[in-house]
Length: 501
Image (tube, rainbow, N blue to C red; front, side, top):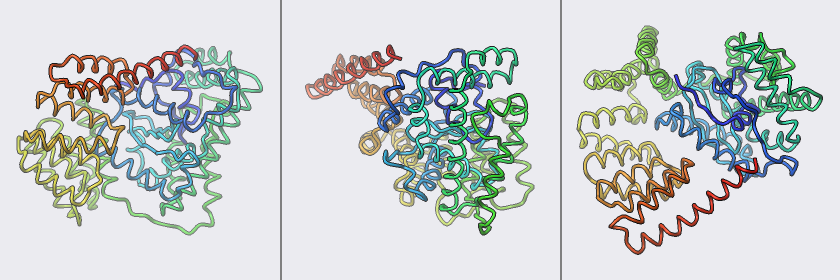
């Protein structure tokens, strides 16, 4: 299975504010070189630079095949995560960060915060969480890191030599999982008093994030005991890792210590129970299928769903039926998928359409060339969920499949104005323009898609193709020229910045 492979510089930044668990991402273990962090003596990262850095890292992550660009999953995570942010709006801070939550395909129990409000969770963590309160405890902890701007504070508090030494220790500690000798060799370059001060800072940051996370859980009406429960699960999962790394080398407090701290803080609180949403169970079933698409992975998922059916609780039955339907759909067994989905919908009997169930229904209809039925289902759902971005994308795809290209173009142009950072909208627009024979507009849309995914040279290539298209009018040429000048300047700045690092 592939793993995300950001640069060593990005790996360090993620590691410095890694999630509450002791397990690192597998990609960190593969890092070969120490990062170049630039001149940190000029002071801490400004909020603007912090956001820009986060966006640069996200460009790389989004290009990786293990980035889970799945509309129902992204919509659930962001709706859920922004509910937590809304519980304590002050976590946006003076920077007013726009939080974005996403998932990566990795069985390791982990989550991480990136600069500027980007928060990622591993698929393995989503499956391990037994309740929404447990998932909320992880996301709230990461929100705490962002709210306190731990990366900016860390970068601003140390010189570059200290940061590189810290990188040496971090990478060495992680390498010890596979080879003690290799880990010791890497750590030889990272010792000293400054290193210990930085590690202490990171431990304090973890404690601070825990406490902020706890306040978010309480304000949001979640079970604060969910943090204790999930930390206990993390402690069990991380035991093998912790056993080979001395406590003083860990950048976070030991899990047992953190559990004790949280328990002390919630001891006097009244017990609160919060029911999980159906979406939580449906998304976990979806992630179980998406996490491992091998034959063995599909068999393992089927076993889990069969076991869920035996639990005889409404949500578990609906989630199991949905999971089996999604599994059948992914295997091309559309009739079976539709029958199982119908059973899931019948068992759920929601007061209104469920977005996750509706999404699969529409996909089955599109796969079986029933565009008119799919259009009706999407339009019904849009009456109840007018702000759903995933549903808007699906609506456009249904219009394209039904050859209603002008309607699709209108819909997507509106979406492009509302969500200027959405590369998927630009890709769909390019598809519409291609079907309409509008070559210049097609390549202009592709250029914007490449810009949003961090590929400026590819965007410039698309603009050159657009300029040479036979249907490129005077207005198009003016737009292309202006955008090309802008991107050329941006590319020069990026090259200059990369040489300075």
